[in-house]
Length: 133
Image (cartoon, rainbow, N blue to C red):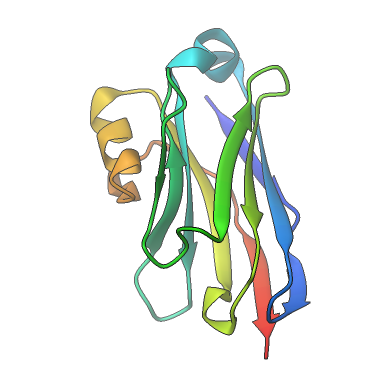
């Protein structure tokens, strides 16, 4: 089993920055960390979940939605078993609950890289980000 715990959410004004963190743990993640892809998704109540950013398992290739490209940066630290989402120049439309996701299957990671997390195996509990104008 794998556990993902997000932190770093909060409230900021337009143009501000936040850094979200995702701490991963569990036997399977510890044993096969290099095989895990990770991603960040967000959801506004009443709307569909949206993929924001993802990082691949091996070469740490990154993927971004058009809505955040140039403003958000995803990274991971294998030694700390962490994934980060640096969010700069935040806009009110970035307001949402942000979720961290991970998988190590080819099928799941294909979806994560495509910013479609429907098949991702593991999810965090989510953290609120609110951007005021």
